[in-house]
Amino acid sequence: MFAAMRFLRLCLSISILAAVSCAFGAEMRTMRYQQCGPEETQKWQSDLRAKLFPLLKLDDLVPQVDTIPFDAKETKTWEMPGFTVKELKIQSTPTRKIDVILTLPKEGKGPFPAVVCIGGHGSRMITPYTNGEAFGPYPANRKDASRIYKGFGSELAKSGYVTISTLVSQHEVYEKGRTLMGERLWDLIRCVSYLESLPEVDKKRIGCGGLSLGGEMTMWLAAMDTRIACADSDGFLTVMDQMEKGHCMCWKFDGLRELVDYADIYALAAPRPLECQNGRKEPPGSFTPELAKKALAEIRPAYAAFGKEDDATLHVHDGEHEIDLPAILAFFKKNLKP
Ligand SMILES: [Zn+2]
Image (cartoon, rainbow, N blue to C red; front, side, top):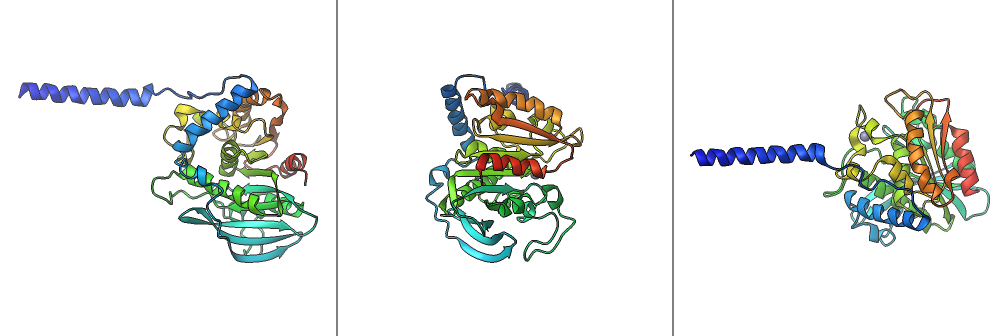
């Protein structure tokens, strides 16, 4: 009887110890970028991607990125000044379809550069394209989150880019065994594949951009998909400690913090041009320029490794949690040359 109780107590204390060491003892940021030469940096990048894809539960899909048929079906189409809009259903995984918006320039001669336009929390699929006003069959909606996106997708579409958008602001996991961030990222990766399949698109000039969660997904897409030529990540650059406090926790998944902080994920985009935008009027608990500067200082060494330190930039604007439209347009004009 006493022996049994002693054994139980021993088991209990071992399990408490294990729980405590798990909570406090896990080593953090073990894959932090350490400045080194270009070859070692490239090796660090591919090693880190190889660790992140399984955590995102995408390692089975990655080899199929270009072999899953799109089976694209047009569901709507309409004309806007300067561009044509199509709504399509395409195959994302072998068993799941996604809706996408695709815009094609009416004028000029392709192949055109292209941009994946990404909305954040509270977005609709059309959010990157409107400023709250009507967009084709979609009526004006002043209450939605569109205002802060400044219609950057439409501005790009008018200026000679092919654009694509899909909704990644869901908070449910669609397929068993996947992760939220993994599914969001995969749908964007498939948007890149779909762009590459179009004769209108110049494969070497595909960029991505977005705000808030869209800025976060811009980071992930540029980091994990090397087909992305440049990225404009807005209203997001920060550090993970900040995101632990008072934010939607959809950014986090098992094993992430043990490997990296955001600066390391952004460093996976080096040496491809990166602009981050943060507003001076971001509230203190949010995506402040101060934290963005701190993170940028940890991104730039990876760019310096390739002699491209100046290609990782932070644009601090006078606004709040919003896109600085002239700056994002100038960034893509410089790097994708429409
Ligand atoms: Zn969320």
